[in-house]
Structure formats: structure tokens, C-alpha cells
Amino acid sequence: MQPMTKSPLQLARASYQPKLPQFLQGNVALVQGAETCSVADHTAIQELFPHTYGMPTITFEVGTEKSYPVKNVGVILSGGQAPGGHNVIAGLFDGLKKLNPANRLYGFMDGPNGLVEHKYIELTREIIDEYRNTGGFDIIGSGRTKLEEESQFDKGEKICKQLNINAIVIIGGDDSNTNACVLAEYFLRKKSGVQVIGCPKTIDGDLKNGMIETSFGFDTACKVYSELIGNIQRDASSSKKYWHFIRLMGRSASHIALECALQSQPNICIISEEVEAKNMTLTNIVENIVKVIVNRANFGLNFGTVLIPEGLIEFIPAMKKLIDELNKLLANNEEFNSLETDDEKRQYVKGKLSSESSKVYRDLPKGIARQLTLDRDPHGNVQVSLIETEKLLIEMVAKRLAQLKAEKTYKGKFVSVNHFFGYEGRCAIPSNFDADYCYSLGYTSAVLIAEGKTGYMASVRNLTAPAEKWIAGGVPITMMMNMEWRNEKMKPVIKKALVKLDSAPFKYFEQHRDDWADENSNYIYPGPVQYFGPSQVCDQPSRTLMLEKGL
Image (tube, rainbow, N blue to C red; front, side, top):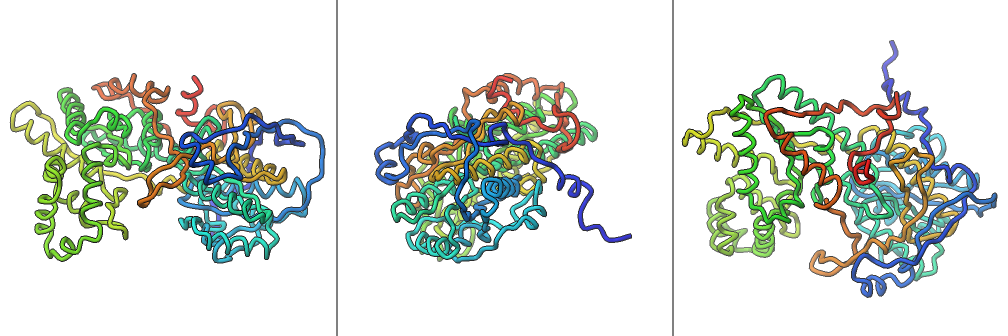
């Protein structure tokens, strides 16, 4: 038998032809909407982006046949991976070749740094065909270099001139698309003739607004995590002896946790935005978890699941204040760094914090307190994403349950298992939804480039309808921006979309979570991502999208 180089699923997915919106299947005409403005800080954003501010939204409709000039295009994958990135590039390639067969596509290697360091390959049909409908970003690699400095732009302009590149597509999240807008503004100011188009990528789901209904990769990642959660819940129901604490990716927003809760119906799901809105403390969160555990134990159910968003710590007001104080206290603090033992450092910190933050710090398990003071980034800031929040909650819940047991108000048995689901979902084979959506985004980018647009993000909407009824076009990136404090200065950034507590998805969750918590477990077992079969099984978008559309 010959050694297998591809799985049967890989071979089958290679032949899948992603679906396109009707208006991208033939000749396209552009329809301009009203002029736009930023979400906030209008004057500041307009001053920073005088060439790209206020542009109209764009939608596509059926047009007449026309010829387009030859264009060479560069593409960059920026930031963390998300399922479907390869299909964006495939859609871009196919769109460019359809609009003019002489068009060429170059891939800059390993993220934005490839543009700066002039590392690239030409993406041919043979290369593209190897990566259609696959997960990952390995076709050209990705990176987290930020395009912010004039010297970087100058180097990018130089390679664009050398390769006769007329446009660059940046596939990334909010920061990457902010950089795309800065680059577009630079090229317009320099009259370089290089367009820049962005594509909305992040599994976190926090790049969304009225024109961007969801970021790509969110659907697949949540389906992967939900399958794992469902499997764990089935095991918990079978063994009847473990409480599983599951931390999920999504530092800045709880969209992943909420979507996974809607798909799997766990006993407990914490939503960071609710914690912040209700000014909850760490103790409040622990007490809420303990209440559910004790209630289930009264019915002999010493098992369950708890979903925890990755960024929870930063949304607890008292913890956020503590982290802010630690960042200021320990940045370049030679006196602290000269202390030899952990206990000396702990005592030093307790003596320097405000009374409120000192109490919070003292109440933390020593391991977590150590992470807050010792595990810091090069700027001296707390690396919040490294804090194992699920272990923190397990330790505090166990301590509280031990107290209740001593008081004879808890008679159950608490055995915990901790998990972190992150990288398992970032490079999965994209769902049919993400495969179609990403291909459409890439194709949309090709049309925007052919029509001479720059400073736009590709937009595909009406995503709960069949793909042929999707609405494609472009949205000015400046429309999504506001000013925020970053690295000790105010900077223009795309505003992150957090979970809204008055939204339909959260309201549905809020209405049903008590039923999911009680003694009659209402677990759902989503199973693995399905690629073949009935449309209602294979092509469904996220529960979040469906609830937002009233479905």
C-alpha cells in the first residue's frame, strides 16, 4: 500500500466549489451609497485620513460586460490564523483571472513583514489549487508585524514599484485592517497608484458592524469548540463525577463563549461584558458557580460544564483596576526587580497597591498572584492572555465548597477538570459557510480592485440567506474607526464589537441559562462539522447570526 499523503476528506474538499452571491456570478456594476463618517471622534479621524474619510458604501448589482486593465495584486495574511483564509486568496485569484486573465497575484510571506522585507512568491493556479477549502495560513504564512512606520511604508512602496503591483489585499482583524487603512492613506498621499483592500478575519467575532455581519473563521472555530464541549458533556453525563471548566479563546469579547453556549447549552457560561456591566467581583462569580454546583449536588448530580471567556479577568472591574496599578507600579521598577524571592516581591506589591487593589491581590491564589507580577511582556505589562482563569476559578470554587461542606450545607463531591480550547479551532478545515463566505470576500476584493477602490473592506452581507442571495460590496474602513489609548498615546483603531447585553443572542441565552443550570441537564451534542449532506446540516451559519436576524 502506498503511504497516504492526504486524507479522504482532504481529497473530497479539494473538489468543493464554493458558492457565490448572484451579483458576483456575472458582470458587476457598483452602486454607491451615502457618504459615511467614523463611529466616533469624527474630527480626529478625518484629520488623520483626509483622503479616505467620508467615502460612500458600495454594493454590487448586475452590470454590463466591460474590459478591465491588467493589474498585479499582492496579498498579505496578518495576525492569528482563522479557518477560510486560503479561500479568500482562492476567491481573489479566481476573481482577478476572470476580470482579466493577464492579472497576477503575489503573496507576501509571513505576514506584513514580507511586504517590508520584500519576501514574496507569485501565486499560480497550481499553488492555489493545492490550498482550496483547506484550513490554516500556510500557503504564504502569517505574522503580527504592524504597519505603522513611514519607513515600512516606503519599503512597501519600493517592492510594489519593482513588481508593478497596483493593489494590496490585507486579510486580518481589527488592528490589521486599521493598518490597511493607514497604508491606503499613505499611498494616496504619495500618489503611488497602489490600492489597499481589507478583509475581515478573526475567530473572536469582534470585528462586526452593520456592514460586516461576522468575521470569517468565527463560524468554523465555534463549531469545532462546540463539538468538543458536546463530547465533554456526554462524557460528564456518562461518568457523572467531573465538573469541567473550559476556557475559550476571545480575549477582548465573549462572542465565542456565547456562541458555544448557544450551540451546546452548558450548565454555566460566564459572559465578560455582563460581569463588567454588573460590576461583579471575582467572589460574585465564584458564588454564582458554587450555587449551581450545590443545587445540582442536592439532586445527586456532581458533574457539569462551565464555559469561561479568555478575557474574563480584564472585565472584572476590581481586577482591571488591580492590573492597571500593577502595570504602572512594575514597569521598569528596579527596586522590585532586585528582590530575590517570590514572597519578598509579594510583600512589596501589597505595600504599594491601593487598599482596594491590595485586598483583591491578597485574596488571589498565590499562583495567580505570581503570574500577575512575574509573567510580564517586554513593556512590563501583565500578560493577561497567559492567566489560566479556569484554574483560578477551580481553586476558588473548591475552597468555597470546602467551607460549605464544613458548615454541612454542601454534601456533594467536587472533582474538576480544566481545559483551554484555542488552537484546536484556528486552523480547522473551514465549514461550508466559511468556505463560501471567504471565497466571496476574496472575489469581492478582486472586483473592488478592478473598479479602482482603495481604503475599503470587502463586505458580504445577508448571510443567513442562501449564498446566491448574499449582498456583496465594500465599506470604508474609516467608517469603523474611533480613537483609543494605545501604548501611551491616542491612536485610530477599528472599534471592537463586544457582546451587547440587549442583543437577541444574549437575551436568548439569558432567558434559558437557568434551565440549562438546573438538575434536568439540557445538553446539546453538536457533533463534528459536516461538509456533505442536507443544507440544514451543512450550510447553517452561527446561532449568533441566526438570532440576530430573528431566526
